[in-house]
Image 1: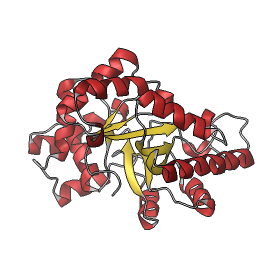
Image 2: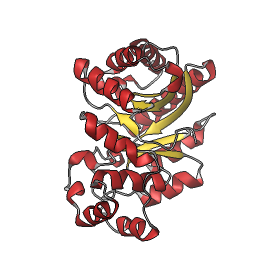
Image 3: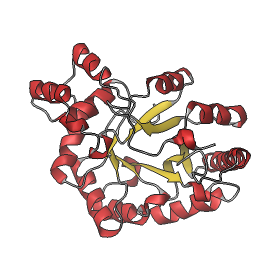
Image 4: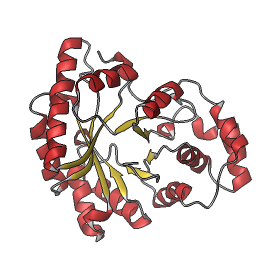
Amino acid sequence: GVVPLAVGLGTCCLSGVESERQVLDGLAAGYRLVDTASHYGNEAAVAAALKKSGVRRSEVMLVTKIWYDDMGPNASAAINRSLTELGTDYVDLLLMHFPGSIDAMQSPSANRQRRYDTWRCMEDAQRSGVARQIGVSNFTRRHLKDIFSFCHDPPVVLQLEVHPYFQQTELIEYCRDEGLQLMAQSPLANGQLGLLNNKVLAQIALAHGRTPAQVVLRWLLQLGIPPVAFSTSPERLRENLSAADGSFTLTEDEMSQISFLDRNKRVGFDPNLIA
């Protein structure tokens, strides 16, 4: 796939020195995928951390996103701003952050035009080499069908909220049928919903001598979905990353147990509300 089957470093929504410190700690721990966005306001901090880390740019997969305020025919300017902030002449993966405006007065036709114009700018960015790959984030099946209807170059990645309490199995199956690779955002439910206190996850974690967070991240990896996990703790950063090192594997029964935890409970904004 475009995205390596590893744990990525989520950076939302730190900024300034806090963000720089987190990314430095993440790179030192061994993270080689860093997920940011213009809306996070920390692209410059990510750039500073990468420069200070001594890790070569070519060794790090940089992911950034175009915010909905920047969607439309001027999206190219937003892409260039992100490149300037990130101190690089290319990003490895450029995503459309949302499928349109989330304000209450949104127009379906206006949002469709935003998607169209933005995707054209993203296709241009890919052809010119400033974006190695292009994809989308927070899209529903309806939004994906729309973009497939007009794109010249289809998206290769969908980043979406996935965790044991919100498994999105139908959307994931659709994406796989369409050849879209998946990335999981909020894989630990942002520490909400009591997910990491779940008894089933706790029992599986105990059996492997791991934490519930490591079990969740391992579950996603075994589903073939790279997770983007956030933490500011150096210890937690290392723990999260170790879910991908092959030191433990969930059994088929444990994978099945987790599949039954779905509650259709999301922690992020519901993109179904976007026209």
